[in-house]
Image (cartoon, rainbow, N blue to C red):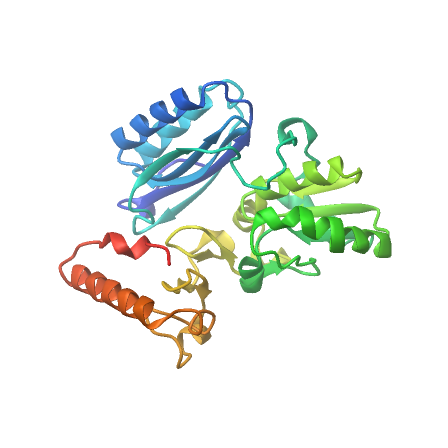
Length: 318
C-alpha cells in the first residue's frame, strides 16, 4: 500500500491516522513526533492526548513512513490504522504536534473508546449492513460535511460541531430510536475516529447493538468500486484538498476564506461570492472592517502566487 509507482514520482504522500490507546507521557510523545516530522520534511497536524493520537500529515514518502514508524513504536500503537493518498501539492503549511485533552472533542471525559467502542464493519460489508431496513444509519460528522456527500438513507444530525453530538442523541437521536425501533445502529465519519467514539458514547447511554465503518468514508472510497458504492457526493477533508471522491481523487470543492466552508461550482458562481472574502453562507455575517482585511489578505496571496511563493495567510481562519 505504501509502494511508490512511476505515476507518484514527485507527488506528496498524505497519511490520515488515529488510534485510541493510552499514552502515559504525552509531553515526551509530542517532542519526539515533532522532531521526526521536521527531520523528514513532513507537515500537517497531530493531536496527542492521554486517550490516543489523531491527525493528518503529508510530505515525502520516506519522511511520512519515518513518522508512522515512530508512532507504531509507541506502546499500544503497533496496529495503527492509516489512510493514504497522493496529491500534487503540499496541503499543509506547517507541522504542529499539539497536546489536547481529547484527540477528537466530544466533551465526554469518562468514555474509553479503546475498550467501549462498537463493532467494526469492513468497507466490503458496509453496503449490506446499511441496506438492511432494520439498521438505523447515523452520520456523525458536521452539517457542512453532510451537505456535500453522505451515504444513502443516513440520518443527518446537522450538528455544527462534534461536541454537539451528545445533546443531539439525548434529544432527537433517542426519540428516533424509540420511533423506529431498529435492530442495530450503524455510524460513520470521515476517517473512523468520530464514529468510533460515538459508538462508545451510545453504548454508555445503553444502546448495545452499535456498529461503525472501519476506516471511515476514506477507506470505503478507497476500496469500494464506484459501481458498487452507496456513497453519494464527495467527502470533505480538513486540508487544502477540501474534498475527495472514489479512489480518493481530489474533488472540485474549494474553501470560502471568509468562513472556511466548502464551495462547489454553483457556490463559486453566486454573485455574492468574492474570492478570499465571503460566500452566500457568510456574506451577511462579516462587517466592513473584516471584508477589507480579507480582501487585503487575498491580494497578498495573489501577489505571492505570482512570485511562485506560498502565502501563509492561505490557511488563516476567519
